[in-house]
Image (cartoon, rainbow, N blue to C red; front, side):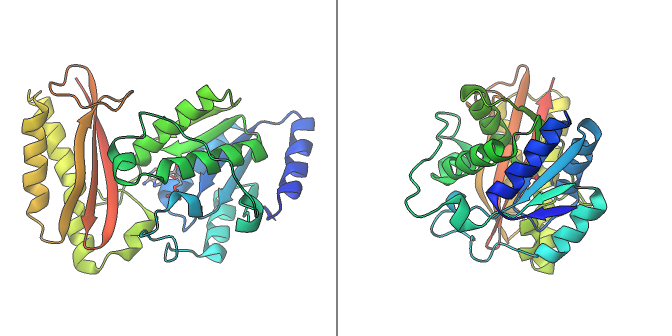
Length: 281
Ligand code: AMP
């Protein structure tokens, strides 16, 4: 596994790979790897000749009061996990190369970033799109892999790639969960043992909502009330938002007819966790 820090070095490698007519699968991450990240690597390896992973905690996607400084980092552990998973190239860019002095360019996807996490974290998706566009330009992958865990992000990135004619196929892979149902996240490490127990309520609420839907409940408000009631039963939990929205435009749905996305962001203590589920009739 090659570990590259500079943009010219990774560009050289990418040029060599392309000359050999090999395909590239790209997995962008912020590190502190877990089985969710590694599932993206598995998919990339299956569908491409070469797998490139980036590990970069991108400062522009964090708000001023958010956890950029304390976001968990452990590069030596990440490198071991990535190597074991069969990543071919790791790109570890530096802030001064990604955002050099005088940096002025940002990418903004409109409308679908106004709701859910975008509604609560106003600069977040601009930061995400900017870094992903830069990473796609640097690594020129055939396919890039994202998790359904960040459902809105996956949709926004797809839209950005389509609108900016970036020649890449965006693949969205299923949510990987702990045995008790909690969606894997690098931020789960922030949870105290009691909070870790309470956090399961997020997935439980989504699961119950699906049961309710499958039993015939199509009224979003009724489903949302059940979710809110269950989550409020845990004293460490505080809902940031819970919405039932269209899977394409993310607009709220009152009566569920076809597909719908239930998306939740919830504080467990001070840790903000997100999760979601798609309802299909
Ligand atoms: P992050 O390092 O949190 O920015 O995540 C990097 C990529 O891994 C994103 O595309 C995430 O959606 C994806 N990811 C994170 N957690 C999970 C999970 N539990 N299951 C599947 N994909 C995930």
